[in-house]
Length: 171
Image (spheres, rainbow, N blue to C red):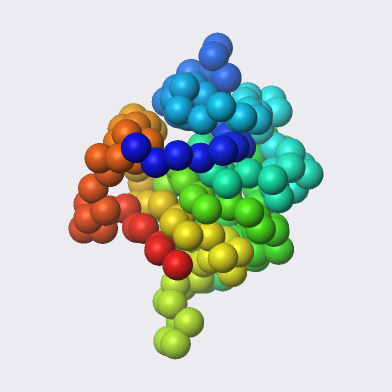
């Protein structure tokens, strides 16, 4: 099993919310595996909470909707409770102590391919943070699949096979 000292989880769902219900269960699963967890669910799953708390967690989980765009990193991004945040805006977030980032969001590695630079995506926006492992998805993914992937990851049985539609960035 992988050990973490602290975690931040931002889940668009709260217990009574039916939209992406497994993001709520993902945050509960993180609580079961990591002792020091800060959780923002439902109405508190906003970008402002990511900004104000992002430097002290070695595991960060964001469970929300991803927005794809091949046109620009200003058009692809994540939806938080307080609105859309572009990949470009996300690139300014400092996650200095984060070892693993799990983006339970559709299309988190979808974007314009730039020769010599890779895919302009949400994952690339976070990659400059010296994060050891970033897990995300190329396509529209069911939140149940994200929950299962998180469960396997925390139990140490995660399949790092990228052909299953997920991408794993290892620094």
